[in-house]
Length: 190
Image 1 (cartoon, rainbow, N blue to C red):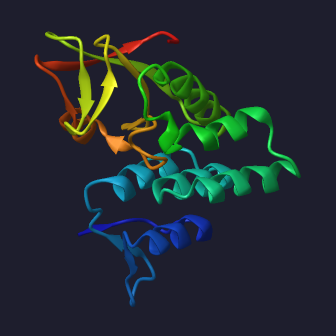
Image 2: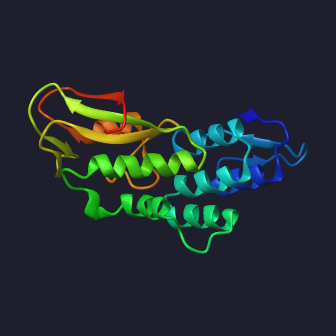
């Protein structure tokens, strides 16, 4: 178990809410055994950028709650109507976008929102060494031209197939099936 120094109250509550630690009764310090996956990455991002709005947004995204992330952003900015880029971000994860040909726009919408939320996203291109088709868990065709675009941010990959919480890169790559070896490379805007 790792003993962390005293944290801000907001971060402490966030960590407790996510179930990644507990308060040591004698010292009042946070104890955490950081499980692998979302909470560990989230805590790393939060500690690197102690911004309350960013914490709220990325905590909501880690839990898969796009509505809470959007609500936190809008409340902080004093908005009553969501701007178009924020609406596009919400729509990016709709099941209707899990079709061939939509990945470029979905990636642009996700990238734009994660950038405005304070993240450092980058576009990635997924392809295979053989064949024309990429499939998601051998259940749905993602691409019939051997190319699929997504976004990587904070060690996670985001697209319509992953949902708002994204997936660890290794987990994401294991979900994509093709005839040949599947690879992921950083690319420019799709």
